[in-house]
Image (cartoon, rainbow, N blue to C red; front, side, top):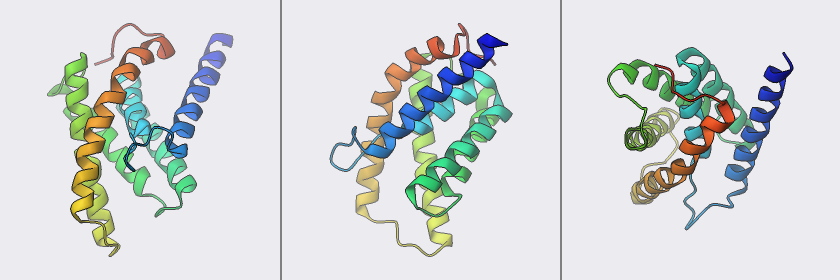
Length: 165
């Protein structure tokens, strides 16, 4: 019981550090910053399963929405959808090695931008322009680069050797 409590405290501390890093834009280069929370949500979904990953993605998205001041629920919907997408395609896309993980990060970033575009189109907010495509390409590269150390760091945080299938 004590080990489980320490695990949740340690994991909450790591998530707070990642949220603070993303919110502070410390890692931002040319107004392009990595989506660390997206990477953590994907890793959480890989390690703990589909439903736990979807709940985690929803609450992390809601937390990011409440902190950023954007439309409430957009990030929650996007992170929940990406967790469900990973859970559904897990039997086709085996995200167990680094290369397949980076491919899925690229796919998830593209899906995230498509969902943002659809949601902002529904709410009649001007979003699509040439800058969006440049930001998408930059974030794909940046998310792939930042996910490398997180892929190797998370097994030490989760204390698991293998990814659950």
